[in-house]
Length: 94
Image 1 (cartoon, rainbow, N blue to C red):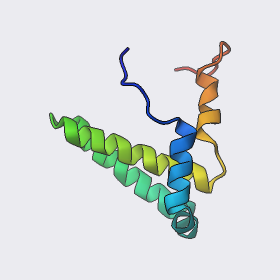
Image 2: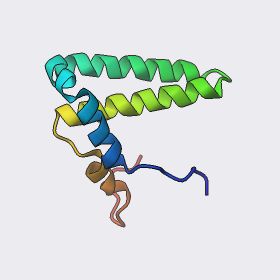
Image 3: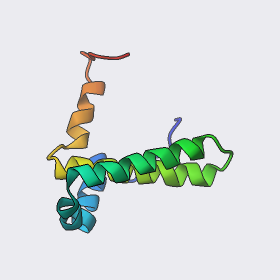
């Protein structure tokens, strides 16, 4: 198996983020949260250009956490949204 055994479902992680940061995230709102997300994507881009595996790991986690935050404050269940990639009728692949 290419990936290590998952310790948590996506929905569980998204719920954890909501429970820990939900109130603050709602107060910040989508535009400001999106800017934080983009900053983390930039940090991930920098990490990907390096040979520092620990930094890559950290930045992937940060990007995913901020993506969950955006999904939470916009009423999107990421696990359900990802089902489009697990069905036999996949549309929109590039």
